[in-house]
Length: 183
Image (tube, rainbow, N blue to C red; front, side, top):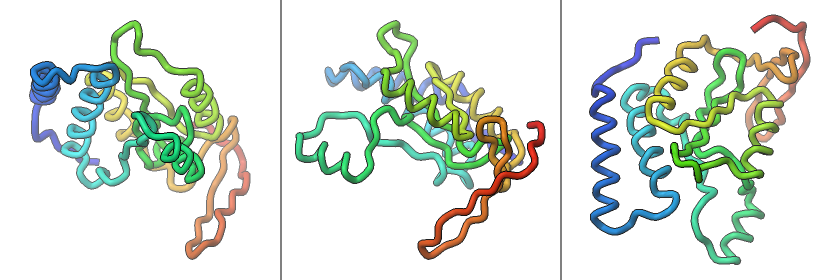
């Protein structure tokens, strides 16, 4: 796969620094904003580096303050505590998807119990899960993942290889176990 390198990594670091300075200037430097600034810079980089894959990287809006009513509606709609901040819905290297949890280098920036439980569940079902604390970590993880071959319907779950046949118009996905092969 040919990747683009329109802007050097230093440009993304500069973007992140400008966002942080602007937040400080406006007095909006609150808990969670550091992770938000990091995530925005990482998403911007990904969309430029891999434009044809950009629609497959999306954020999961689990955080933020909500009224009780809105929270109840969102829970009924399927919002799940602990889901990773970013999901790259592209199967590569034997994984079904890449789940990215954004944290900062601060000692207070840790995974919650719900995030750890969701990590275990998503890894158990054949997805790759990574906690990224810096732009450089995000870049390295994404480059490594995108360099892997497309999985083409084969995902490894608990050490066994599965294949999927996907149909449309409301039909369910049929998974059947096939002979285990090495990754």
